[in-house]
Image 1: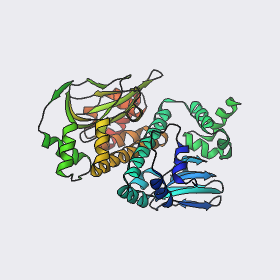
Image 2: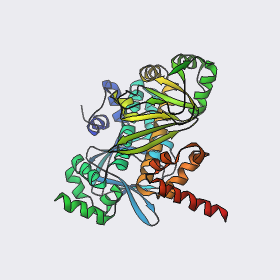
Image 3: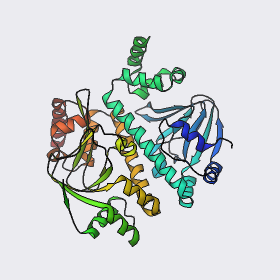
Image 4: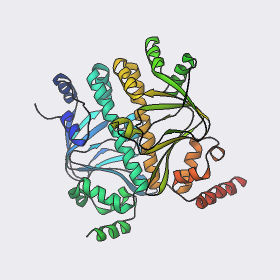
Length: 195
Length: 203
């Protein structure tokens, strides 16, 4: 079977409970997803758009950011086998203040909220799969929030490196600093300590 | 914890109110009622403590509970659940592993709880209930996301104002220690923030 959206979701989580779907359900889910290719610098979403997609990065690197007082706040970075979505706008289907931008040429697997909702109505297995997935997304988000509160920037930088050492080096440091919630100067001090 | 038998129709109405005014069928209501347990706790009672497994989720009917973490000698207040808000420790709830969180009643509190296994079994059976749970998860994700954004990017003043907006009568309901540990400042700093706000109000 060709690997699609469903198979890729499993690669995004280290610890996933039994979420196995029957072959028919997998086919159905994968048939509702699309693959797109975007160039470096291109946007999947602009401020004011309603966020449509739950996405997985197949190759490349993306960032989610918004503008605050003229500054770009980098909220999320995702590279190969990582899931991304613009939380509030995606779930509420309201206009977003966020941009989703390619930092490298990227191939993305996408499923729209409308299709997901429709699939969940039609298919009980997918409904439970989506529920389990949402629980996992919430777990991840909570862990990250607690990390940000408890752990100093140095530890969070190390965690980021451990998660995917090579891509942190691909991201311009100004975005890494903003992602960690520190100034570029602080990040540079942290990096020199690591060496 | 004392278990209280109460008017089940009332509980069900409460849950519907909490979870977005979704009208459940009589059959689903009946099933949901059969797994709801109402609990009453005193101020400072612990609903969950580190080492326990959080095998339920609760919804506050009256009063307020606080979810907090204690790590590296640091107390972090994670969430205040007031009337109508659900609470659980998602990590333990999903994995079934012992929790690191504490859930404590900050006021005399009445809440309903739902056992995870029973609740999920019902969600599997009843699509409309699953839809409600899906919405609860999504709503919690948004809250959590906004908290993360606020932790990273908001000033202490902003955080205080946002908390005040969400919890009416904040200052009289939550101790300064807990508010300070939620915002991530010392009590002295919190005091300065409050007094600045009062100055502002004079004008």
